[in-house]
Amino acid sequence: MDNENFAGFEENKVTFKTFNDNGEEIEFDVIFTFEEEEMKKTFIVYTDNMLDEDGKTKIYAAIYENPEEDYENIRISPITSEDEWIIIENVLTELQEKVRNGEIE
Image (cartoon, rainbow, N blue to C red; front, side, top):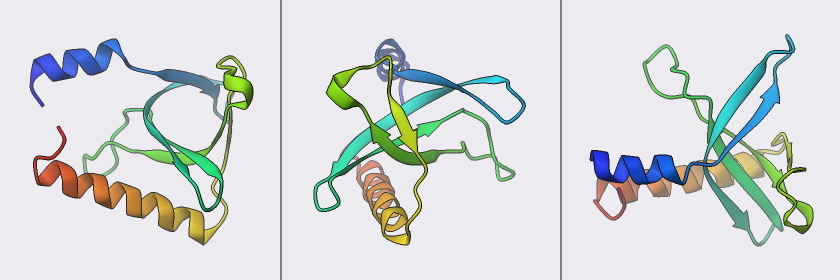
């Protein structure tokens, strides 16, 4: 990604903060959200920008709830079903394909 596009991403970056099990505050960057119509759920994909043992950025997913577009009281809940994980994996695979094919940067 070139610097111009990256700078634009940084300007529009959406973040949220939460606390880990040790009470330490952690900030996450939102990668994207999407709605799955059949399940009537919205999902959020996000990162803390940490790397895994293979040097890849860790990403996480959860169910995203924002009643009445109240951005001060957003709730995220863990994904608990295999069907939900399949949906997340399919969306991520589709996005990777689009990036590889040059359809999105």
